[in-house]
Image (cartoon, helix red, strand yellow):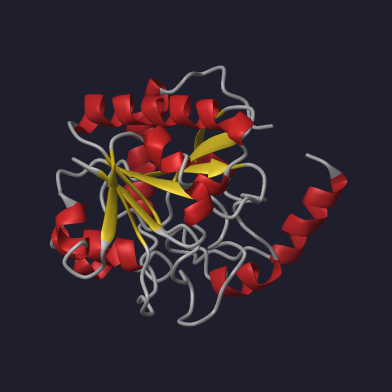
Length: 235
């Protein structure tokens, strides 16, 4: 780990409650640094490639809730450089296969620079760092969202990526269909997490800052880590 990264992590002063592994200064941290650029809890990282890593999400709504995150600070997944796209798709497919094998299902979504994740009306660098949510859940999220926001359906992920110039701020959801949404009205924070949590009757888990759910994080790590390549190295 280089000296600059050590210095930045030291400044974050990560504090845990004595009775649980809960990060208690998240909002303060994210005023200073993007936690996706410098992930402090390395134990949550299950797999890495040249430009991405797979991490167990803080505040998992269900066991097996993962994130695919770009190592570089890129605003959204559909804004990735073209030369990263094949690597991203291959990693996404690897995650999908593992989640389907272990849990029987997998959906994806991304907020795509739309809607804050921390405080209403405030943009944070952490929120706008490309990260795809990968969830082992049997739910058609698009059916709920399209009742509130007009969407566009795509025949493939490549077709969606080819429209990226038209998609500066967007929501992305892939369940039985691949769809993007662009809202003219202000969305509640963590909009897609809220929609998923309420769809699964887990409304108390929608806020990952308040409900970090470390017990479920540890269960996810224990269950999924053997399924990822042991040669993976954080770079």
